Length: 339
Ligand code: KG4
Ligand code: ZN
Image 1 (cartoon, rainbow, N blue to C red):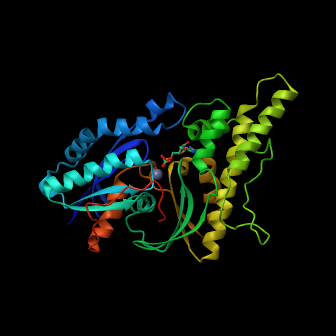
Image 2 (cartoon, rainbow, N blue to C red; image 1 turned 30 degrees about the vertical axis):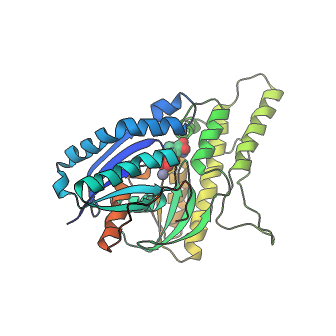
Image 3 (cartoon, protein in one colour; image 1 turned 90 degrees about the horizontal axis):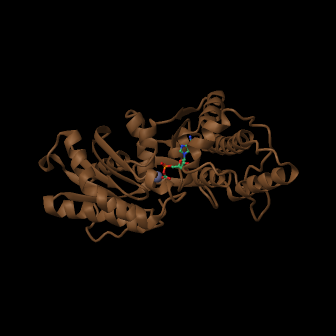
């Protein structure tokens, strides 16, 4: 039985976990949201410094929670890409140092592969093939999961990620950061059909639209124009809940339509959702309803595994380690990298 300790510091969570195959022994996340909230979004330099302050304590907590000593750890994994370079460097340097000190194998894992593996933590019996819908603050992708390390990206955003769109719209409505949860709760009191907003189709040079790619920047601008129009027309307070509900409905329906079409086109009967936007109530509603009518199973892992965490990185590393894969200690971090 192989115990993997993983470190994830690609953005604003300092996370360490210990996983045995698909069983989580410990999962510690030190969130920086309260700090970045003060600035209205993630400040990369602040994130790196916070990771530096947190990392040793979070590693110790993960070992304590799992009640394991270093002698019981077989390999150390870390997120190597994509992400904020300074933030990634803290986690990767810590992982390499610990691997050298304790004489363990070292593995660098792609962050999106980790998000895919989060699904197995929620449903350990799941096996590929399935379609992964990753919707977070940094990514919006539809990935055909064929096997460990065998992925085909079928769709992605051409500009902002879905969570980024929630955050930007929340900022322009002056609702604070992160925007997703605030918009989600405000939308509950609003009318999702109050305003018609553009879904963000991606035109193809040969005509027609890309079936799986999305674009959210036009939608964000449409919300800005709507706000300006409403403010010009009347001095009444903005109908914030109607705007939030209409925006959320547009994002949720667009993501649902693309994911279902993609699954049907590729004959996939399971869709696994991951990333912070997987918490969104409208997305959950539309995706569950549409998949049921098409005999597709939709899997939402527990939210603690959807948002950034190290258990998902450890789970991916465990599968690679089982296959004899390890990384060299001169592995570099990369801000961008294809899956
Ligand atoms: O996966 P995550 O924790 O971090 C990244 O890797 O980005 O996702 C964070 C994103 C933020 O943009 C946040 O606004 C969004 O997920 N989010 C939501 C909800 N909860 C979090 N978006 C929509 N509805 C929610 N309920
Ligand atoms: Zn992530």
